[in-house]
Amino acid sequence: MTRFEQQVLASARRQGMLCDHDRVLVAVSGGADSVALLHAFCAWQEALNLSLHVIHVNHSLRGEESEADAHFVHRLCEQLRVPCVIQRLNVKGKIPTRNGESLQSLARKLRYEVFTKIVQKLGFTKVALGHSKDDQAETVLMWMMRGAGSSGLSGMPAFRMPYFIRPFLGKSRAEIEGYLLKNRWPYRTDSSNANSKYHRNRIRQEVLPIFRKFNPNIVQVLSRQASIVRDESDFLDHLGAEALVAVCLKTSTNGLVLNRTKLVELPRALQRRVVLLAYRQVTETEVHPRFDFVEGVLELVNRVGSGQMIHFSGVQVFRDYEEIHFCVVRTNEEVSATLSLPLSIPGLVSWPLTDHTLRACVMERLPESWNEGPSLAYLDADQFTPDLIVRQWAPGDSFFPLGMNGQNKKVQDFFSDIKLSRKRRSEVPLVVAPEGIVWVAGFRMDHRFRLDKGKTKRIVALRMSPDFSTSAS
Image (cartoon, rainbow, N blue to C red; front, side, top):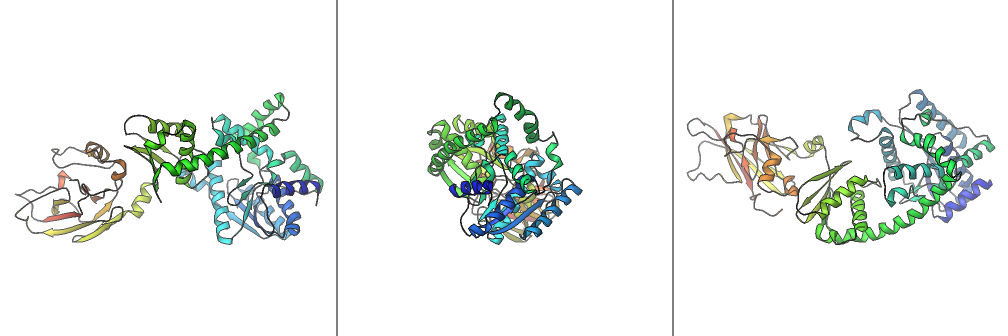
C-alpha cells in the first residue's frame, strides 16, 4: 500500500467513513479523481475485506465522448476485476421539467437518484465519491457568492449519512493526479470542464487564480474554513431539529404544518434553521434553498396577517392564520393522474382527501320542498355533457357562480371572498363537465347550468355528504 493510500485510509477510518466488510459502490466517471479513488479502494480491499462494485452514470450530454467515457470505465473494471454497472440517463429529455435548475444541477440530482436506487436495491453500505479539496474550495466560493449561510459555507461533508462518503476530501487535485502519474494509470478528461458557461468552471478558471495571488494556499484555507463552519452548522442543525419538533403541529406525505406562535418566539438564527430543516424534510433532500426563499418565509412568519404564497423548487409555503404550511407542489398532470375521478350519472364517488361522498342521480321533477343548499345542487341535464369528473382546483380555473348574474370568477378569488383557508381550498372537490365547472362542491354551482322552470326537462341532482362547508377540516 502506497503512502498516499495509507494516508487516505487512515483519515477515512478516523472519520468513521469505512468499516471492515463494507459493501462499497464506487462512483467512477472516468476522470482523474474517480479513477484514483477506484485504484485506492482496490488497494484497501483485502485489508478491510471490502466488497466493491462500480457505478458509471452516462448523462448522454457529450455524444461520442460520453460513450467513450463509459467504454473506458467498463474496460478499467474488467482489468481490475470489479463488477460494473453502466447507467444511461436522458438528461436533455428532462430539461422542460427542470423548474429553473441548471443543466449541471439537474444532472447531479438525477445521478444521486441513481446511486440511491442501486444502494437500496443491492444493499450497499457506502457510496464512495471522488471529490477533492479543490472541489471543496470551489463549492465554498460558489455558496459564498450566493450569499449562503453556514449550511452552504460548510461545503460538502466527508460523510453524509447514511452512506455517501468522500475519502479524498482532504487531498488536493494535484496530489491525486500525482498518485495516478506515479503509477502510470490513465484517466479521461471531460471536455466540458473547460467550458466557461458553467459557473463552477468559471470559479476554477477565473476566481481561484485571483485568490491565489493573495494567498497561494487558498484551497487549504477554504477547505479548513469549511470544516470549522460545518462543526458550527451541525450544532445549529441539532438545535434546529429540536426546535422543529417543538413547533411542528402535524406532518403528512405532502408536507408539514408549523405553529407560527411558537416559531416567532425563537431567536432569528434558530427560526432560519427551522425553515431550512423544514424545507429539507419536505423535499427529502440535502438541497440548500436560496437565501431569499428563507428570508421570505421568515417575513411571512413574523408579519401581521395571512396571505401570500412563496414558491421554491417544488415547494410552496403559505400562512393560514397561526399555521405555516410547507407543501410539496404537484404538477397539474400529477394532480389529474391521482385525483381525477369519474362520476357517473347515476353514480357516486368517494373523495379521498376528506372522506366525503358525492352522488349524482337523474330526477324527473324537483321535490316539493326545493332546498338547494351548499351540499346539494340541481342542474339542467341538457346544458352539459354527462362525462363528469371530480378533481381538485388548479391555477386558472374559473366558473360563473350562481347569484352573480352570469359573471365569470376565478375559483381562487371565490375562495378568497368566502375566506376559505388555503389548506381547505386544496381539499374542495370540483365537479367538472367538458363544458366547464358545474359545481364547486359544498359551496356554489355554476350559473350556466341552473334550472329554468319553463324550459328544463331533465334534472341532475348532485349531493355531497356530509356537508363540506360546515364539517371540520
